[in-house]
Image (tube, rainbow, N blue to C red; front, side, top):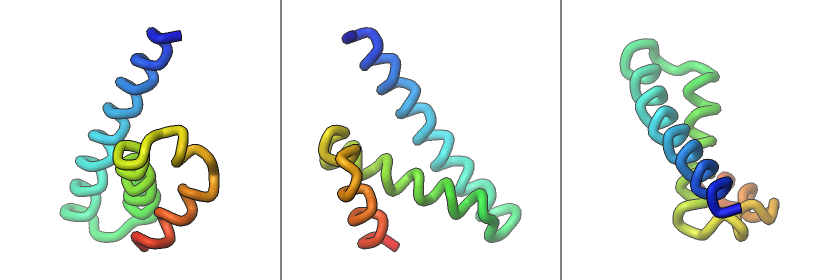
Amino acid sequence: MELFLWTFLGAFLLGMVEAIFGALKDTLWEGFSWLTFVRSHFLIVAIAVILFGPMRVWGGWDVLIYVNILD
């Protein structure tokens, strides 16, 4: 179980780093796109997970609240 959690956390962090650089690249070189928009929302949820803990954010409503506050 612990190995699964560390693997999931590593994949999650790599995805977050990819989202940050991907969103920056798309915004700087190509202007606004829907892909950048989706990535920025993923990034907001990822930051919420790091700040408030995965169990609280994955509760469901918290994700909607955090995304709506930051939009």
